[in-house]
Length: 295
Image 1 (cartoon, rainbow, N blue to C red):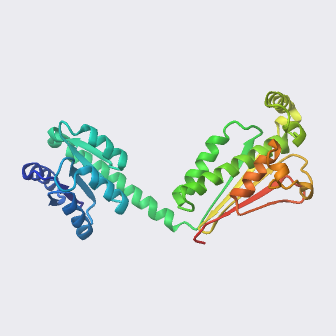
Image 2 (image 1 turned 180 degrees about the horizontal axis):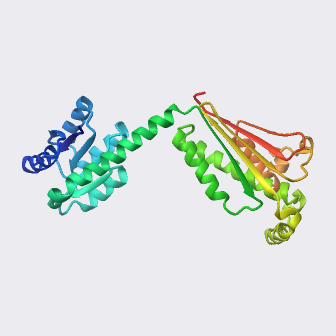
C-alpha cells in the first residue's frame, strides 16, 4: 500500500488527514514543519507528501522547492486554508502536484491522493521504460510545404526531452537545425529556388515561392525525414525530391563575407548547432548528427 508523509504544525489537522488516509489502508507518518519533513523523506521515502502551507521553521512553499530540487519524483499535495491561496499558487508553480482546501479534506483528500499517486506511478513506469530504450527510429513523409513544421519539430523535441538525450539548450538547438534543414529541403530542394532568388526582398520571395508551390511538377513532391535516436546520439536524415546540387561548391557559411547573407543563415545555424553534417553526392539528402555529451 501507499505511504504518505503529512506535514502540518496543527496536531488536529494532521490527525484528521491521517485518519482519512489510514481508513483506506495507507501507511501514514507525520512531521510538524518542513525541516522535519525533509528528514522523514530521506529516511522513509514516501509515495506522496501532503503538506500544510503556513508552518514555522520551514513553510510549505520552501518545502515544495526543496523537494522539487532534491526529490523530484515525490508528488506533493498542498492543504490550503483561507488566506494561503497566494502562497499555494506559488507552490503549484514550483512543482506541487495538486491541492485540497482544508475545509474539504473529508470530501476530497482520498480521491485527490489516489489520483496524484496513479499519475506519479504511471510517470515512474514510463521513465523506467524510456530508460530501457536503446534505439528509437522514425520515418516521416512530409508534404511539400512549410506548414506544420513547427508541430512536427515540437514532437521531436518532446521525444529528445523524454529520452533525456540533451539538456533544454541543446534540444532547442537541434529543433532549430531541423527547422532550417526542412525549410531548405522544401524551398531550395523541391521548389528549386536559388540562393539568388532567396536574396530578393521578403515579399517578392514569398510570392515566387507560392507560385512555384502551385505548379503540379513541384506540388506533388515530398520531403522525407528519418530520425534515429539512441543513447549516444541523435541522427536526422532529410531528403527532398529535387534535382540536387554539387555540395563541393557550397560556400562556407562561416566566412565573414557570407554570414550576413540571407541564403547562408540556415546552413550556418545547422553547422553551429550540430556536431556533424554531410550531403550525399547528389546533394538532395542532408544528414545531421548531434552527439550526447555523456556518450
